[in-house]
Length: 308
Image (cartoon, rainbow, N blue to C red; front, side, top):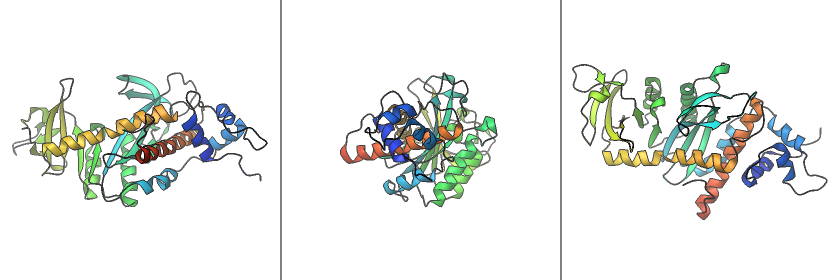
């Protein structure tokens, strides 16, 4: 059997170099011309190989993380696919960017950061309509994998979507601390007299320790968003101060910077393929391309619009 004429690295280099068009035909035009130059079919076959294992991303990322410090941030983003007709994995999702439900692919990422580096360590693609796992099941699976890999983060950060009791209990069972937003209707017991929605609780600037129904004691904070909406936060670190919460909130924005850089610099949304296997491999290689750009930014200070 003849060896493949292109490999993962060839496609990653194409993703970094390309600006607007991210097709296999365009990828075949990038290498220098010659007898060994791969045809577009070679790149098509590359994307159609067996479904990718996210271990390939971790093997590259682990060199740039400190397992015993830093933060783990988990969140999802929607890869826009407004014109997709017969593309697998494409369903309807809420988009924070568009502030409405849009057609696209839901990508979940586990990101490690020390406040400077933004290192994607694991990812999942949500495919519940086809019998796949829920977002929260993917969330717990990535946390389990992170623990197996030796992570012991200072804190785990996530949005209110991932603040279910099962998720919070899993993090606490690892001996890890978390900081998460809570919906305003989450029930807490502030004074031992019964559960009430958290929006009805008086919370001083430095936070208040309450009993979160089904979980246990947490410290909650109340902030006001730029739009004037009240936001509620909870942590199992009962000694946390408002200054620390604010610092962690700022660090948590790193995943939004990562989402922007991934979409702007790697063409993760633009693969013109239909099969799930090809989409998943394209996403994996796009994350590996982002990782190279992020490492370059950290070493040179040149961002190229990726990273902070």
